[in-house]
Image (cartoon, rainbow, N blue to C red; front, side, top):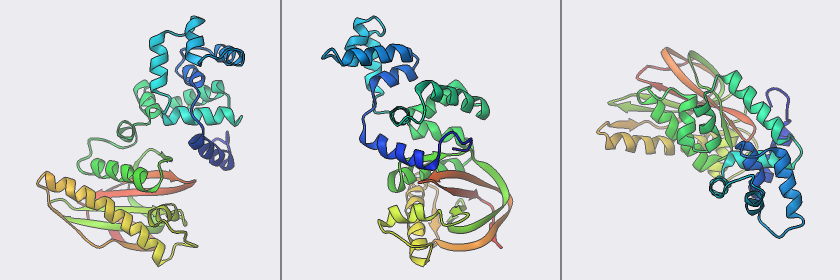
Length: 285
């Protein structure tokens, strides 16, 4: 979308489609570079004439080994493959065009082959360390847990962007909570406009017309829920914190003498920033 290759409406259509259509084995095989797109098309044409599964025909033609078919079957429910399938079926991009975009994405982001494999795996525990420094004490664990909770409670179709550090952060809307004790943490969700509704509505299971007190309360409840799980984890490690009541604010900025960590997350088409600061006083000005 950033490069204008697909529109927001196309993306919305793809996400809706991939939830209701199983991934085709042929597209997975091409994406995994086990067969060519031409070979996949040939097998698809043969399936119109033969009452046989894709994998059986591919093995009979000598294009795939039985072990490779089993491997492809194990990946058939993979979110990345579902997305590629939806792009292809809706004529947004061909498999080859998607592969070209992936190579460009890898080059632009300086991602390794292991990074790309993790991104394609759909395993959030493998994906999160690509976007945040996993060696940051407390911050990385807190961010990782919050992202998993967003997927669990808010939306499982999110897109992470690389995190960054800053000492000043201006926001349109902010819901936040502080944890005080053996370690002090500041955890927040912020947006430039009303994008926080993409958190409030699914968590409250309610439609809001705008970011008002009720919708802010829903975002605060989600933050409190997520931080409660993190506080329990810390307690098991004999690290005790007290959770202060979550609060919200608008049209101000966060100021700190130490770095604040920001992880931008695309949720339902809108950008929401997950913010975490550890053991540093934060002022809201």
